[in-house]
Length: 165
Figure 1 (tube, rainbow, N blue to C red):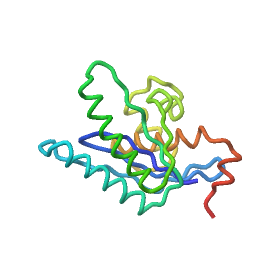
Figure 2 (figure 1 turned 90 degrees about the horizontal axis):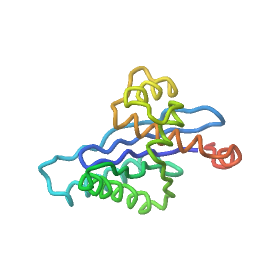
Figure 3 (figure 1 turned 120 degrees about the horizontal axis):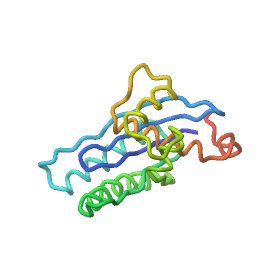
């Protein structure tokens, strides 16, 4: 099963592709889509949409996992994040892919074993779990963590049925 994880953001949207083969995790690719803060929001959302479409067409995931919007104090930031997330979700739907959502707490607990883990802990665990030679950039690491979280939440029977040849 090939999962595209997406960590949405209006400035940087991280993406990561992971294959789940049995109980093994295989790193396929990761990266970041960057927008310019000087550009109007519709231009930035278009960049995110087109970038996610390109990633989907290049890496052909079976499904998409995305982080849910977390609202703490700044509602305006959460709204902008929701727009970026929406652009990514629409890109998945445009490519007929199902989207699964996970909270930041679920992602951290799934990958690190502790829901309050810090960013550097997530990055290091991603490096270890995927046997990477270097720690990936923060947004890409978060996206890879979201993909891994989705794989951890799948039943073994579903993983076997959707395994790549």
